[in-house]
Image (cartoon, rainbow, N blue to C red):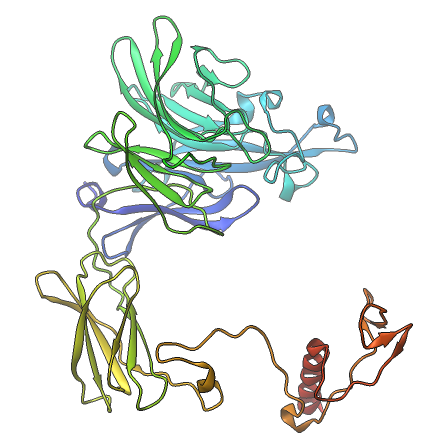
Length: 487
């Protein structure tokens, strides 16, 4: 019996991102975030992809996806000058302890590229089909599960289809959705993610998906939804049983997303391209709606579990003071720690003479607290709810801005710099000559009539204190530094 089968662990993917897929490996971490197992795909094929790393069978095996570029005849898709390139979707079941391949399935052996709804060079992740780095991703494998009888469920985003695959020979037992569904359906879905087997009896199989209903270029519905589907095996009828949407008007997620069922029957959803998560009661009534970013962020899946962690690493501390008679502001966090209730702060004028100077409740990921006195040296201690000290940060020397910068700072922080401000006499070089125009594509100076200091191709003299083009000054400084070191 493995340690990860009897204790809580985190399972994740680590790798390098490519166009719509990744290359990497699976990791199993203990509750201190130590790596206890790395899981690789096998068979001489590309490294694992991020779309599925699902540890099953009590931790004994893992389902993993791969993306395999192959040369392929794409004449039917207007790629006629020679061999094209296609991405094959591959899944493997891996024995976790040994990384032995127990089962393998390849999309091109079973699914014709003509079943794809995403043609070459039509979306941000479709690929052009013209070279190995932009192979046409006709299938886009993105979800796996295993049924109790040992067969597999496979989700393909670009065919908008769920496949049930035989564990005996890899043949397709049925398809749901797509261009030729095996089932009579009263609903549709497209660009879906996160196929999961839920339950089964003598007549009915229950599954769930996250229906994106959009890939950012085409839509089949206005909003994405988590969906629960009943498959009547006797009549080959698929029925939509329950949907779970985002509160406050709904969300359309053009990529990623998942649906997880909790032990209390609630549904927990990650909204993929939207950095939101939500929880609903079994009947769809909203119970929770939150986000970790409003812009410039996304997540592949979101999960809700009870996980307790005290990392091996120390808390991170930064302390700031406007000057040596100002208050000291503590910025402290401990990435991954779940048991911190408060922070105790220590400070002093010397590193070997610190005293406790305050305590404050933990407030979010990073706690900020100010103490009225200046302390040159500081430490923060993480404290549990029962008052037990968990771990100290490293000893930190408090940062104070210099005499020029301090004029722009407050008692709690300094502003972020907006860009370079080159002074006329940097390095004692004197004023830099101002060019008569901007750089052209070949690197030469080109005049322009749009600048108020330039008229019909002739330059107007500009004094050293009035520099409209700081980039030229910076280039001059860098060139001067190079000359000093090479002369």
